[in-house]
Length: 129
Image (tube, rainbow, N blue to C red; front, top):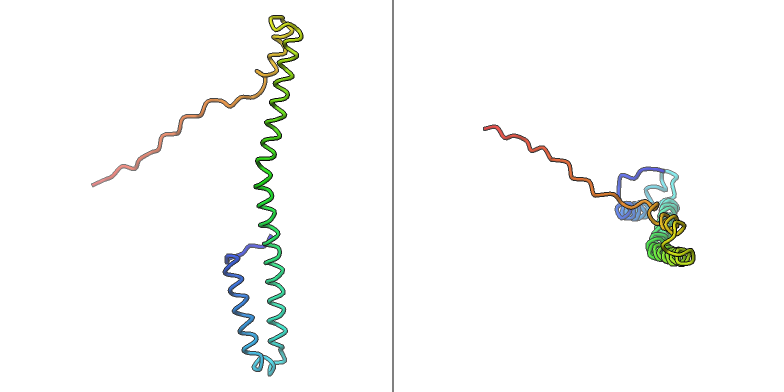
């Protein structure tokens, strides 16, 4: 991937300004055997490609953001259904039995978040007077 030193807005502005300059300087460029109007059109075509790619990327970002709750809800629904079915299994084998205790371990085997670590102390610089 190529690195950009300017923002997309800056590039758009620069390309537009250079295209206008090429059109204005077309007579001088013609003396050098260059077609300013053709060069301006070429620049505008490059910009149009970049703007189209940017619009497609922004649409993908919107779709990705919109899909996040769908995914989270689907996992939540699957977990809730599994939990309910596990309760049924435990009840079916008599909830006080050893077999039920083994089935209950399914829940305890799930990795639970650990305690939040304590923040590290921040060293304060000593001031000398």
